[in-house]
Image (tube, rainbow, N blue to C red; front, side, top):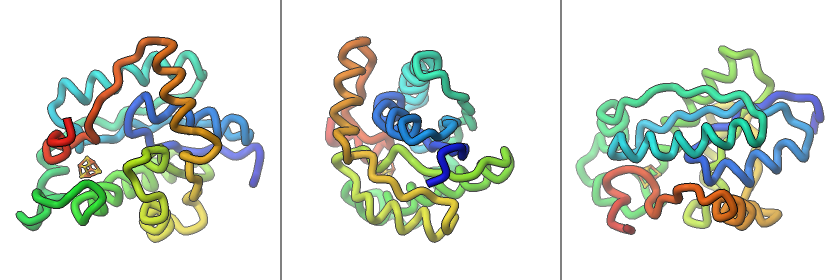
Length: 182
Ligand code: SF4
């Protein structure tokens, strides 16, 4: 791995970013955070997660880009079939959701002239990293870094640091259909 490369890290929330940023910085990457999550419902929740990330920006000294919020656009895309609203977490709706966010991250990486892109989504114990890798590679080929941030205790590190700073931690993935886990 090129130790001096830049990477655009798609960040799903502040908490998940902790272990992921640490991992990438330990590998020598220059990390740019990309908060693009129009899937999060309601908007107040989107802003709460962003607030945590802004605090982490100064702790980890990363660049941070926020792309903006359009839940209706996301919903139209990811629930193009009504059945997708009933899908369990990790099902077809989620595959579209991963692709929606990773495609935007890929284009942003190109726009910023960065070397690679990847996502914090793999740190979640609820998400299948292999499926995320398949989608990322299909979009960006070798420019997508297939790093499983769950490894090396990534999720535990995130939780430990968020407890230390008393950060807000959500208890559902993001969209209105995942709130059932609350
Ligand atoms: S459960 Fe999470 S990954 Fe799946 S569609 Fe909803 S926000 Fe996206």
